[in-house]
Amino acid sequence: MDALNREILSLLQEDGRMSATDVARAVGLSLSSCHRRVKELEASGAIERYRAVVAPDAVGLRFEAIVFVMMNSSAPDVLEEFERAILELPDVVTGHRLFGDPDYMLRVLTRDLAAYQELYDRTLSALPGVQRLTSTIVMKRIGVEGTVPIP
Image (cartoon, rainbow, N blue to C red; front, side, top):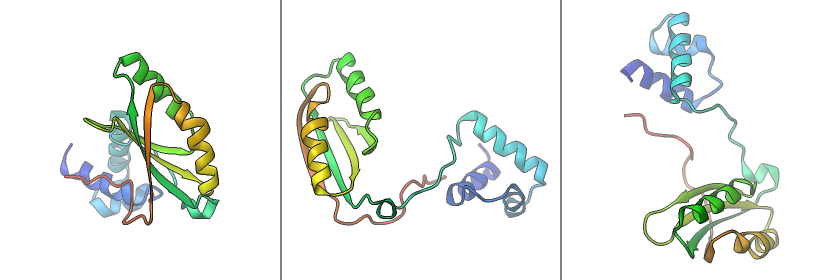
């Protein structure tokens, strides 16, 4: 990973729709050299995917909660079953396994409090291995999510 690749990653992370021509111009490469580098970054996994960042409010998702999950077992099969189940829930937009207590942290988006309560009562509490759930309501998101500092 050289300085040019880092610069390309930074540019594409800020604007994934930036044209190859504009990226090449910004980093001082020919179009073909820049295109080759981007393809190599994709093939190596440094660029995982391209996507649009959607404003939750714009699609009617006005309620956000962070859910902390304590598991009743740390057996690998229980954790794998829990993680598979989480991946099937569209309202759970991110999940993190943590060291210590709690075991997991989930970011959840729903239409409103009533929809969250239904998800919590019927789905989250019934997930494999769940001992206890603790929620906190997000009052405000600060800053832009999803950018990775490129050293």
